Length: 95
Image (tube, rainbow, N blue to C red; front, side, top):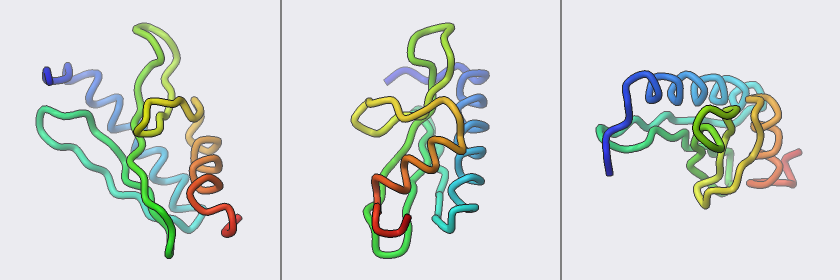
């Protein structure tokens, strides 16, 4: 896998940090992963629930940024909306 341009990597990390803040407001945990040479992700988890890596990047080059499931399905553009969707999918009983 090719290394990401630094500007794009920094944007991904900033967006994942925004999602992490929204996740925390909902009482969930987020852990940012930034392995060298790999796409950054946010591991989202709650008490006794599933966990999932979430990614952030544009749908196509030059388009709006989205949050993505690990299986490459877009979630939402907005961090608050994405946090709500992620937590409801991972543990609908906690909503």
